[in-house]
Length: 160
Image 1 (tube, rainbow, N blue to C red):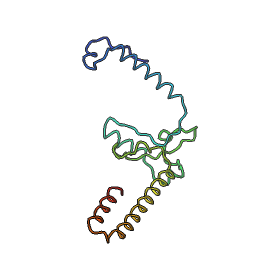
Image 2 (image 1 turned 90 degrees about the vertical axis):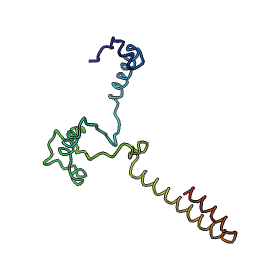
Image 3 (image 1 turned 120 degrees about the vertical axis):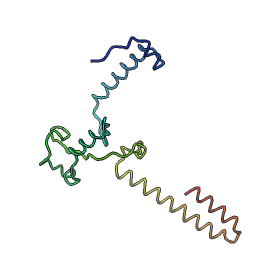
Image 4 (image 1 turned 45 degrees about the horizontal axis):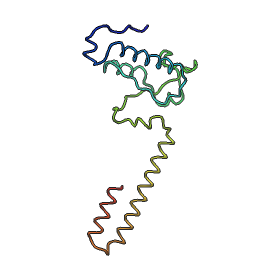
């Protein structure tokens, strides 16, 4: 059940907008959420926020299992209420301590390990190629004098 719009002018003073306009935006967002909840989506990661550190610790304690058990999906000694109901199979999820929000690469969160490793390999190879080309260029420029070599070193530091 959805709450009714606030009637107080205190709302307008606090938020700077009319309560009825805010309520209409809320209903629109609520309808969008209901529609999105009906859609089936592939999920790679889920982030859960707890109200207290104690609740987080308790959830981690109850849901943490070894990597081997997650990989094999071994369900013995793991109660049904702690499994993810994936079509009745009861999948064991990999639950772990979260990273800091600033440490998460939000744009790459749905990338597979292959995509991530490919990007790392390509960027490493490109950096090594720049370093090799720069070292070769510096060796040929040594006869020009120290100022030219120092300039090339500074340029390469900026590029790589």
